[in-house]
Amino acid sequence: MQTLSSSSTAGVLLDLCGVLMLLLAFACLASKLFNRYVAYYGTQSVVLSFAAGTAAVAFHSAELWILAALTLAIKGIAIPVAARRLLVRRLALKRDTAMSTGLSTSLIAGGALTAFAYLVTRPALLPHGTVAVAVVPLSTAVILLGALSMVVRRHTIAQLVGWLIVENGVFLGGITLVSTFPFIVEAGIFLDLVAGVLMMVVFVSGLTRQLAGASAEELKELRG
Image 1: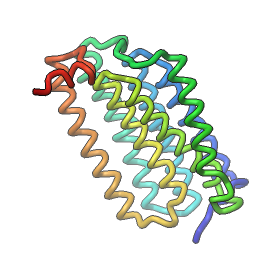
Image 2: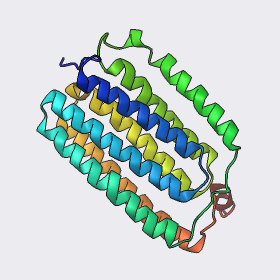
Image 3: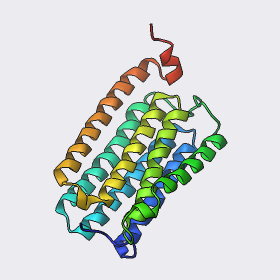
Image 4: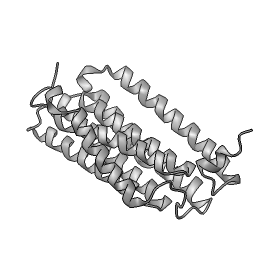
């Protein structure tokens, strides 16, 4: 199996990308402003596209270059711009007040989940000397923080951003172990997720036109 050394330039850059993505996930968890939710997600996606480009250079993979370009164009630019214009600006969404916990509690829980991610993906379970030793725990922590955002935020748009962060964490782990996954599988998963995101954005956009301040708890009350 082709591996990537953690001491190589590409390995260091992938480690750095993982750290930046984790910090941006924490930043999103610590914010209450919808504009910042979208901005942090867009920045995280740009970092993810750089990580995919780094892996493309390391593995000499033209397919990864395509995924890096798609990630930058769709997730780094198109989705954040569309979300800002169609959801945040049109609906005049500013501050997210629909939260089940305080910011301090959310950050403490996020720190605990990050420590848990390192425990369950400890280096002994991964190939020694490969970049996956550092990036897999980081990507797992990003996934857990995105899921936590979906739990503590009750507004539908904030939960959507949390779901997108989860997907970014999954993709980061995937490109780190790219030698074990055929390109067609990764591309298929990527396009399926993008299609799902676009459908969710359209759904949320139409829903929030009628319920701009709706939260998940309020929507549950509509069930008969």
